[in-house]
Image (cartoon, rainbow over all chains, first blue to last red; front, side, top):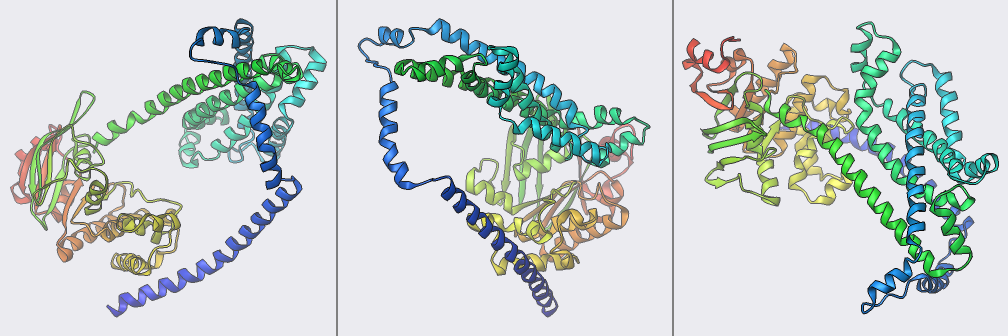
Length: 297
Length: 246
């Protein structure tokens, strides 16, 4: 009994020493974090009085853009609100296509760049650094700025938007994919190296099967984000519903603003639901192996 | 007393466990033997309710545990501690925190969220590790341990649950002979000293002979043998393992 309590005391002493060491760091980082938040809020002019004073004005604006709908004449009211529906739908469709094309192209570019950007696949630290910085560049330049360049070069229209979102998507997905690649266990790759495979074979046969579900999940998430991005990119003339939204905002056509926003929210929700269903399918087909494993042994 | 009454579980068209009836008295050390895929694993997982039965009943001391939900289900899980083939520890937690996972069901939620375990519970966890001869590893990260050490951590986690039953699913299948002996001896000692009922899945017949007084043979989801290890003759082994005995 005394032996056991001796052990407990010894381990507890070691543990509290370790906790003290950790606590110092935790407090330090906590203090730094709090300081940074306070500084940013100050510099960014985040103020309660501004928020409180501004809120009513926000209410006024929302009140203005809301349509006049009454239960008695709902049909005609809706028709009145959505008077330009065919044009808007076709612009929304453009937006979806921009998002779709640029997600696919960006994902392909990101996929191939992610492997040289992965630190533990043997491409060497120099290659990894160069590719990583390049991906960073693609990611850091905002889509809107890319879009401005491309509108200048290729003229108004969806092409500029597609290129802009493609580059940004490649940058984001390339980095994410590279990080996922780094979580793959070296042990399983060793099995393929030991069989005499080249590096690209190791990637294809060892890395890709393990990362595929995560990749797909991120691509779907990116598609949702790109639908939003594609609807804003029109603000600089790069095609889609954004151009029209910018127009009605600038011209103070209040009811059209809410009509377009409502359609956008509907579209994004639809994309959300569909991609969620696809993702769920992929994940559940992965999990389908579990019962088989459970019935073993 | 653990009683299974025509317990069944199907996966799609596969009957992994098929109308199994079994009763285990308190303090018994029962080996469940059979080929891979015979349904041994599903049987233990059914008892802990990690897998839901598609038919039949599980009773413990007269209480029907196959219908429990919510808090009482979690308490049943605490009482029927699982030990897994792959240890199922959390690699990024310390050994001590892994053992304290076994206390989670008995402590308020905020204890888990802050991981501020009461000193009394920490002492219980360290004592459990000490009993298994690995108290000195308490502050290491779980993934720094060898397989045999990790399995003993898992046993310590099971012990601090204050269980009435230990369900060990192929606990030594991934271990070397030396670790196998350490882990099996630990289970035997817990069974002897604490009077805990132990159900252990083994596919190695020799281990069953060495440690179990009673064995249950499972083939294709059904119990095909249930009796003393000494009654396990060549004929019985053939029924359990089929044409190619181990």
